[in-house]
Image 1 (cartoon, helix red, strand yellow):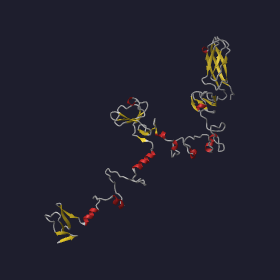
Image 2 (cartoon, rainbow, N blue to C red):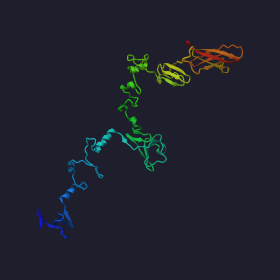
Image 3 (spheres, rainbow, N blue to C red):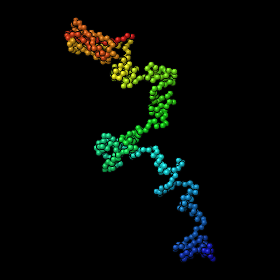
Image 4 (tube, rainbow, N blue to C red):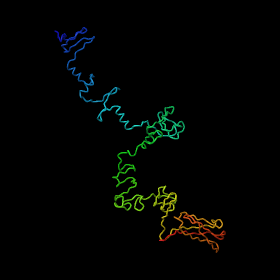
Length: 407
């Protein structure tokens, strides 16, 4: 019996022939398979069940076109190993999870760091080559370079394993100093901190706790954590106005107002000397400025700050019932010249020369001396003995009393 299919006749056999001829085909009625002898091998035509199992097996590689995969609408269940090949002709993408074009990504980066050329970090910025560098060590050379680095200031030195290799920076070079943990940028002539290259006016999101004294939001004036920074204006709210005795109607005035309450003028509260004519407006002092000499515990106030001719008045208060005074003695051996004179210099000068001096001679005998006080200045005066001979004189006692009204 034979089976004919579209002109092809299959012999029906209960077992495969022992010595089939090339191209012989048959139907095995025992295994229910169509078989053919081809190229010395018996091959069976797979039944439908086996074919479906093969076609539906994900473990078997089935050739599928990209278009077939795209139109199938399936979702990948794992990563795709590209085997070193690139994905080409990608669109720009519109969603955050889309694949991005290399050029689009590059453009985004360049737009944020335009003009900057990022370099590898350096270990530190130093003047002298280290004694035992390791291959790959990098340093920024600073002034004044020594040793092998002489004349290489601003350059980047990298140890190759046997020699230093130098990179001359160009404008826009930027790198990180790992020792100081700072970023440095080269402006074409010198390196500077990247922070110095940022325009402070461009800073965003400054808040109440931000450590920038240059900025204080108007809405924060009631709880200022920094400097007010007022120039040519006045504070008119009662919270601040009352500091100078002001109110909403009588605000706290700036220093420019000479008669109204306002900010305290620049003062020196830790001086160790008395103020002089050179402590004037060029140093920021103004009329009303105070000066405290902690060495002699005196207080001074400026009544004129003309350049090179400042006038300071001592405000130190004398004890109740007493005038400000000074006293001392001059030994006879101190007098020199003809007639003999001696200069008395105060440890702490008076505010001016408006004071009186009383001189009392101390002698070993009953001898009278008529002394004259002359050359009287705020810080000194001269005792003139009016004679060239001062026998038996041991010393001259003196008392200087500042003119004024006792309390």
